[in-house]
Image (spheres, rainbow, N blue to C red):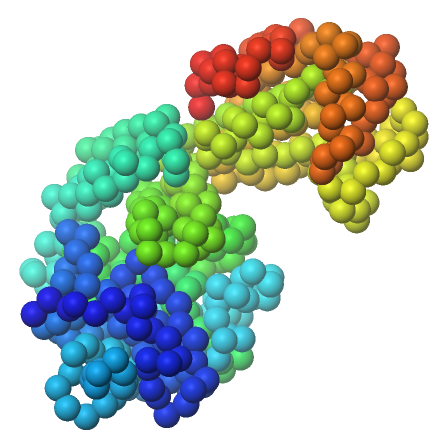
Length: 516
């Protein structure tokens, strides 16, 4: 029985009824989630992604029941059961009497202030929180179902299939969510690791590390009741192939997620604590491989949300940006080397315009000296703070701090696999040397795009820019002063760009030079 209900239209306060009118709704690529004051209801979308099929009412009911059954293994009192939704004319009642036209999983509402993903964003997760998680997971995996049927999901055949499925399902997003270069690096790393480590995967099966686990073990599915209890919920119910597998795959998911939130200290502590209490000496050999796999899966999910035109535009945009970060993280685990491009030149030469246009075409981090300078001083980037050359906020001391902060940010971003685009004058050779030396230690040779134009063109650009919102405060007099002090670049990998051609033509030249 195919659902004909357009839940996007009927999930409103006027068409739904509960015991309370206090509720709000959000959606993922596979579910609608209705949150009331004490209860949460999850309705499965009638979608088919190949690995998941909720297209009939019978299937949605079955997977609702599976969700309750499987999640009760880790937090039984949280999942209250499966309830029906009934219809009378244009009105829908959750837990109504009569024939159900839809089903929902009914859960207790968890304390929002305890959600791990929010605690991470606030920097409030501690080693004590990790200890609680490890204390639950070690005994869980010891008793989780295993055996011949489950062991199949730890075979090289299935693992390879899972990885190749991910690659196939994300090819359409190359250029938006990840570059071809990064896609190729991840694919080649994955295939090579599987080819070289067949004996290790077979050993994991023999030693009993393939279990019916969680499948979606990351911070969005973990909640703390202060430090008294941890809830680990929302496991994969719709496909055994994603839930069953090596314990290392589940653990790597949470470790990767902690890396994603820039908490490598917690990620490392989590693995070390689990390894110490579980006696799993080979875990670290598999860590980067499964982290790469899990980061890629999260990137894929972000692509699915981005590709769903029913999802609000702001949410789709956030999903794409998140997917880009996950794919970059996968690239990092796969041993990829990020690229750093510097758009340099004097004020008014077009470097900012070109840098901003370029990053619209590739997933990269944009770091602007104009913005960094004002953020360091607690100023709003779009407000102008005019000053004479090397005076006020443009004093040599503040400029030094600005370049140091830009370099530190660059090193942070590339350590997570992210390509970086820098936008600054870099008129002094020593600032360029600072950056080159810092990148050399990480095996990276940067690309330099030196933008220049005639005085007449620059004067007109600066006059026009003063009428717009811009982080730049440079006047034509500033440009002339910069020009007198400018130390021309002689760097390796240097593109000299006269910027009076069309933006489209210039971007083509830049793209061919950088090969991001």
